[in-house]
Figure (cartoon, rainbow, N blue to C red):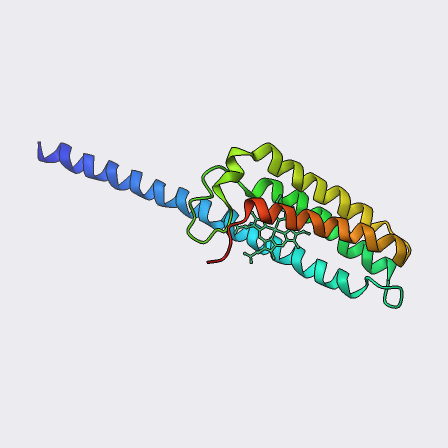
Length: 150
Ligand code: HEC
């Protein structure tokens, strides 16, 4: 009797250890932190984009680097909204995202497409509307799917 309960405890301890290892693996790649950091990088690129959005300051090479970065980040963001990640207390993502995941993903695809178009601009005149179109995708998605700061 005594012996079998020792075995039971050992087994329970092992299961516990396995669980905490699994948890560590998940939290190492926290999707909420990843998407917030990625959005921040996108925000920074858009800010730098504003700096070259005039005939006097336009720089085609820089436009390409910045906007290709935004496009790549938009693609990356697709994988950073797993189901259940609206429960994280630190997220500003609206739970509506997961009721409308197809629409949300479509918006990210559009953001990527418009950003790569803006990256191909070789003149300030071409960049201006293309850059504005990218900015419009940010705002319309935030209005729908990002919780307002209280
Ligand atoms: C498809 C929807 C969508 C698009 C498009 C989008 N965002 Fe976001 N953005 C979100 C959501 C949702 C959050 C909240 C993420 C969270 O807190 O988990 C967010 C958060 C942010 C944040 C705050 C990050 C932080 O520090 O927590 C910034 C900055 C940002 N977005 C910038 C942008 C810019 C700039 C663009 C356009 C180039 C853009 N976003 C396009 C949905 C979108």
